[in-house]
Image (cartoon, rainbow, N blue to C red):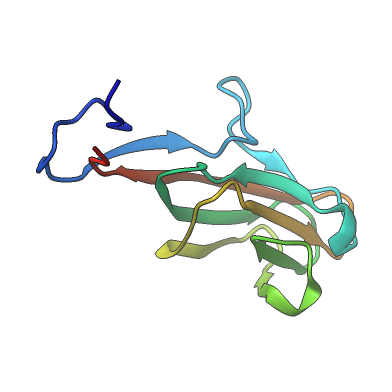
Amino acid sequence: MSGNYTGRGNNAGPATEFFPLSGATASSPGILITATIASSQNTLHTFDANAQDVVFLSYSNVSPASLVVYTNVGSTATTGNIQTTVASAGFSVVSSGNFSGSKSGVLGAWTTATTGIYAYGYIARTYTATG
C-alpha cells in the first residue's frame, strides 16, 4: 500500500480541516484550568503525530479577580510559557494562528488559581500528500 497519509494522490495540494481542542468535549467545549504548577498542567490539546496543527486559543475568566494563565507549547518546562493576564470577567485571545505543533506534542495550561479560567479554541490541521 502506498503511503498517502490522507488518501490524497501524489502532487495533490495540502488540505486543512478544523477540529476542537482534544481536551474539550462536545458537551463542554470550555476546558476548566485547575492546575497551579507547570508539572501538573491541564492538557488542552495533543498535536497530531504526522500533520501540522495551528492553534486558535482564548481564555475567559469568570472569577472576581485578574488571573495569570501560562500556556505551554510542547512541554511542561516553565521556560517555554506564554504568559497571559486575563482581567476579571474578561476574555483574552492567546493565539489566532500564531503558533503550531506536531509530532504528538502537548498544548497545556496552568494558572494562579484553581478556578475561574476556561480555555476555548480549535486547531486547523493541515495534511499533505506523502506518497
